Image 1 (cartoon, protein in one colour):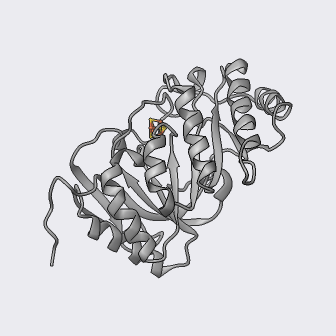
Image 2: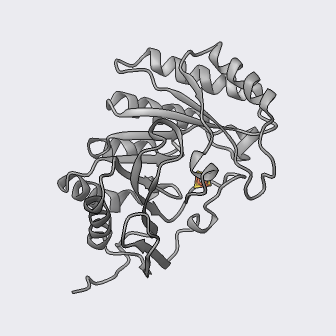
Length: 263
Ligand code: SF4
């Protein structure tokens, strides 16, 4: 029987199984639960259809990797979202579910229901987040295993993200003992001072934390939207050097899912 749909349900964009193409879990198989809505607008965002908090069609993959979509209305009852994730999870070994967006932490109230349900099903959760909602992470931390946190550089993202808020977010994640890493997107006109300040912040927070220091992943931008070019090879080398001189745990990893033609 179909559960009733209502305003308290989850705004979902899509649910599917794919190869993680970014940062620490690159190459692992994950169930992606993409939520609708984002509180910022990055110049290179490759999910423009997931930015607005609005009802609409949502697609759900039925068999992992087959792209045999069912299209259903969103908002989606949380129980149906959990069922869709669980079905993919059991059909193939997956590392975890990637809660992504948009900015998934925007739907904080719904997540207080969704995340315990996923935990009860034995499904570990990774949150892919822009790192701007520290209070929400604090509230939900007990249900989160991994945090992939973006640090935004205005010269690349074109956003006005508050560095103090991002710092609080990282502090909350580390203090909660979550497996945390930081992703910084590099563009052709990356401001070196901004990169240095971001890396210094991570170094300072890592120094004050009892857990393992978070790795910083520098991700050369994949051209999309208003961004038409990535940084050239010399720029990537120079920016990597800049970051390494301030913090030893910095790696360069591009978006591999796009290189191999995946979602
Ligand atoms: S935070 Fe992510 S979803 Fe939001 S605009 Fe930036 S890239 Fe897009």
